[in-house]
Figure 1 (cartoon, one colour):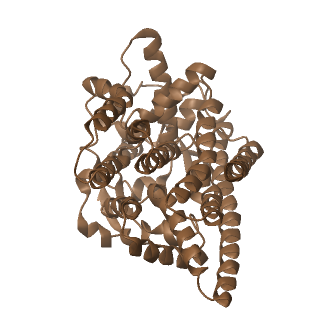
Figure 2 (tube, rainbow, N blue to C red):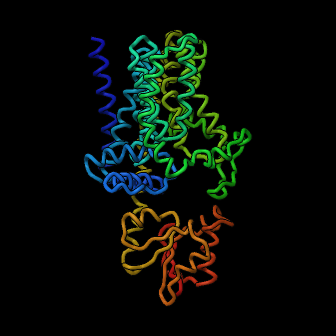
Length: 483
C-alpha cells in the first residue's frame, strides 16, 4: 500500500508540473531560445554533433560542455531542433518535484509535508521559468538531486551501486554548471563521517571510476581549449565584502543593483519569484528544527544551503537564476517547519494549515504569472525579426549588440556583434561606398558600457562615419551608417 501511495503521489506531482509547463509553451509557441546564453548552448550542441560527424574540433566555448553534450545526445537521436532541446528542460523540470518529494522522505519528512515540498518546486516561479528555456540551470539541478537521493539511499544501507550512481550524477551536474563543484566536497565529508573514518575502498574506487566517465569529454575538450573556470569574473572578483555591496564594475560593465548581495542571494527564502513571503516563517522554523537534530542528514541539508549561498553572496554580480541551487533545500525546510508547527496546540495547527494553503496558492499563482510573463516578454523580443523586414536590404551588414544571436538565428542578414570589435577592425570591415546598419540600445551602450568596447565602437560609427536615424523599435534604435 505504501508503494502504491508513493507511486500515486509521484504521478500527481509529475503530471501537474508537466501540464503547466506544456500549457505555457504551447500557448506562446516559445522555442526556449532567448538572450545570449541559450543560443550559445544550442549552437555549441550543433558544433558537437558536427565534430562527431567530421572530427573537426569544436570551437572554443566559455562554459562547461556538460549541458550542450546532453543536448547533442538528444538531438543526435531525435533531430536537431529547438523542440528537442527545450523538451530536455521541460522533462527534467517536471521530474524535480518527484526528486524533492523523495529527498524529503529520506530526510524523514512525513509524507504530506514531503508532498507539499514537491508541490512548491512544481509551481515556484523561478523553477518553472527555468524549465521553459534552453539553459543549464534545470538539468544541473536535476542531476544534483539524483546524486543526493542516491547518496542517502547508500547511507541508509543500500548497496554500493547507489554510491556509484551518486558519483555519476554529481559529475554530470558539475560539468553542466560549475557551481555544483561545491557538492562533491560536501559528499566526501559526509561519507568520511558516515564511515567513521574507515574508508570503504571498494566502494570508493568503484565510485571514482564511474564518476570519471561523464567528466572525460570535458577533460579531453580542455586539452584543446583550456578551461575558463579560474579565469571567470565570479572567481577572480569574489570577495567577502561583496556580501554588503550592490554596485560593481566588471567585464560586463558597470552594474548597479537594488539590494546588497546578502539579501539578493537569500531570495529563495522570501522573494515571490521563488516563494511566497507567507511561507518564510516555515523556512525559519524548519531551519531551527533541522539544527536541533544534529545528524549527517542535517549536515547535508545545512551544507547544501550555506555553501552555495556564501559563494554567491561574494561574487560581483546578481542574477535571480543563480540561487536556484539552494531552492530544493528551501522547500524541504518549509516542509520541516510546517511539520514541526503541527505538533503544537490545535489553534496554532489550524493557523499553520491556513497560512500554508494561502502561501502555496500565492506561490503557484505568482509562479505561473512570473513564468508566463517571462516567456511572453522574450517571445515578443523576437518580433524585431519581422520588424526589420523591408527596412534594410536582404544582403545588409548589420552591426548590433544584445540582439545578435536572435538575428543570426532567425534572419539571413550578415550580423556582426560589436562587443568583439574595435574601431580599427570596424574600419577594416568598412566597404567604401556601401551603407551598413546599426541596431542598438543606446541607453545601455552609453551607461552600462561606458568606456568599453560597445560604446567606443558606437562612437566610431557616429563620429567617423556618421549615422542616419531610421526608426526605433522599443528600446532599440536602427541607424544607417553613411557609405
